[in-house]
Length: 308
Image 1 (spheres, rainbow, N blue to C red):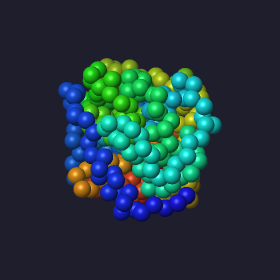
Image 2: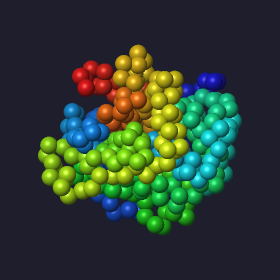
Image 3: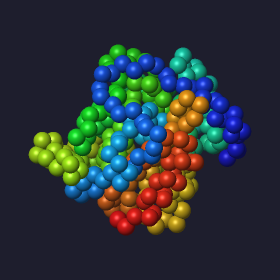
Image 4: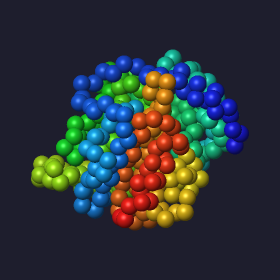
């Protein structure tokens, strides 16, 4: 991979901005100036808030590529198909005319594009993916639904379905802001796979939810779930989350996401572990820094210093 100028790459991300205007009335919790880490037990649904009860809702950045990848695979996309990444791709979309990657990744397939979070690949692979298809899959995976006693983060209204899909695919649309609990639940659904139901997520403060809500079915096919799982695992082994568990102590699978926030960055990472027999899922939000510089090392410190 060719390392592009980092300063130029960051400047290019500033130009993306918050695409579109929020159009949903769903309740949301705006991100505050401190990190937030949430985790859940995939067997009993218990949720832990070791850093406090905040569950920030921000644009998911590249975590949204998991939704796009699932939608592609379930629509018959050839997972062996490769696209070339030169570091820049002219998308020709009004809201996002050009996309950038920090590295020129070369030719790569969908699994590796997830692992390395390649914007150029996804801009090419999703040219025929509609926003309606993307949002339908996002909705099926709980990103418009309350979770653990919390309201959903911001989710696009029906009027957004006719917009270009790329801002949603890259997690940059201003009207799509799932909260940390929803993203953690997404990781949990990917972890347990199709044919299973994720228990109702609850904390000690809202244990009664177990009697009021229903377990969420996994709206993924076996093929799409395996693609997401393997892409997230490769991300930890050699991709954007490579510094999360370098000694492979926890066998984590993860996906990172970074978005601009004024003149700075915010970042998140979601994942599950252990890979072969998932027990826990998590989400970490960092208010300052890219995922590689902030969310990944912060999550690493928390996960590796805890007895699970």
